[in-house]
View 1 (cartoon, rainbow, N blue to C red):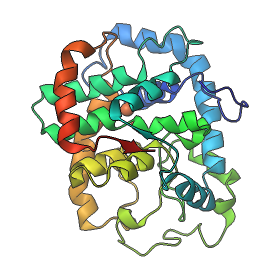
View 2: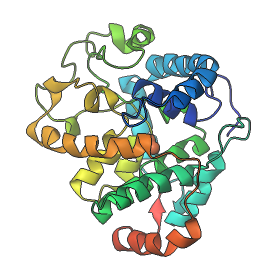
View 3: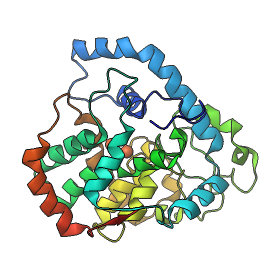
View 4: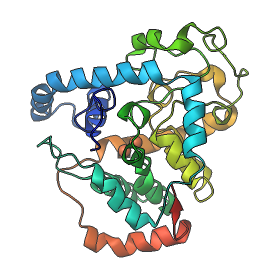
Length: 291
Ligand SMILES: [Fe+2]
Ligand SMILES: [Fe+2]
């Protein structure tokens, strides 16, 4: 991982955030397993402090203005051009060897997600969505701090929901006491639809914008809102939704368990899988992606 100040890297690795998601939203199929509970207990204490610190920074610095700045900077897509395969190699530089428990690289999580979707017989564009959904984490390799890449996302420009994890930390965010942004609707109209709402900046919005011309609408919602837990798990922000969002929510919910619960210590056999994915990528995506 890029070495940076502690403010940039409170997490030992990006998986700590996702492990914490599993603590908050345990797999309903394995809740009863005693072994799993013990495993949690072992790592929970130290990990939670870093996750808390991570959210303190995230909630403090993700302002409406910060989001506008990052959108200008990264949605120009003028940093790099890569084939999907080169992009996976690039993304895999994020592997952190300081944590002995992190055994799988980024590509493995993406493949486990997409393979679980494929096994359940979902459409091929959803398999591709699974394969690509965390590609936006390359933002870390462009020097962005962890709190501007991962973590739960939420609307900026209006009052923060108390359904957002560690919502108490928003009091340190300047928007929290700014009259333009701290009312229920803030800069938005009632029922305006999420497409008109700016989300906190991170890997979801970035990959959505990168792929928005290539995937069907439900896949784009999965990319764009997969970390918006306050919405798809907690039911917040109903007042900003339109009918299209309500229709798409079921797809975002369908995707979420594949992201959270497909992790397994056994890496998928990439050599065997590669021909299938080469064909899939060629069917939907251009030869090179712009970053
Ligand atoms: Fe993600
Ligand atoms: Fe993921």
